[in-house]
Image 1 (cartoon, rainbow, N blue to C red):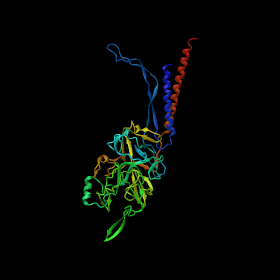
Image 2: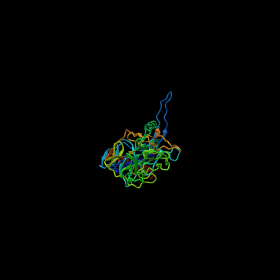
Image 3: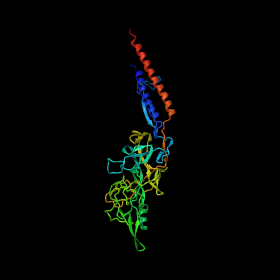
Image 4: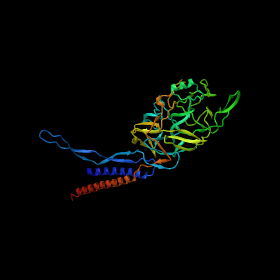
Length: 437
């Protein structure tokens, strides 16, 4: 057979691949968060029958003579540019207006451990190698809801990741002037009972506080005007925020009667739970069995904050983490609407949509015998001001039906033209065989 027939066969295969890409785009014309693909052709190998020359003193030069052998698939690209907003009216539905991804995964904690080579990605913030971050998944679909355990999930039951509001391990309800000066010098917040953690964790609604009793520490006796009076430190149903910690060590001393007691090693709050809230108004030494607090009017704000109302007060659960790759078109498409930042994506930068000053230690690995750990610059939450969130809707498919139909026509004609080459080549071979009769 001749080279023309092989070239045409290669053209048929390449055009069929392009038709598969077009068919997939058209099939997902109404798939939320879908990013259309584009296929390009590439010339195949060439043979040289005569080399070119630059010429000499008496003779001119000549161009090389080459014959090509068809085409092949050049690339199949993703266009990750933001698409149009499709309103749904669901409070927790949201879309990113710029480039970037939501992070969803299992109900486990991703922490940074610089000493563990098998766990290089352990922080949700900072610039790390994208090829090392295999979990969580990346997605553009923000169809979130609250499951029975209080986790913010998507419709595939994967948990949304972000930066949660937690108990402040350095909180001092009655700080002295010296305490405030020392905290300011160290850059530590001791006045806020709760702060935003820098640790990348599954976002969950706070638990509902148990009824205060003397046994669980909810009722304390104080002397007022010479008389002992029982005082409630919380009310039943108040939001209970978790302690979070990467190292799993009981590093922070407890507070008794509003005063920090560093010698009280037996009652230190365990900070190793990121899935279940463990706080002072349940039981510091066991998993809380209280239900998630009942929140109304839940929504995700433009700054990524997840809020709701409880007893007329606004409760901020946390902030959505947004992942941005150096090359967003280079992410690897997984099943469904999920991507992973593997080879081709470059570095992955995880940030919040708003500047979140925090002094919490977050994911930093704490050295042993460190009784006064300090926040470091590498543990700060990065801010991504280029993106924002629109709530009450999802991102529509980026498939352009008119463009896909035009590509379909040119692909069909290209396929048809290649079949004609095969037909003509076959006729020529038939004439050659029939020369001897």
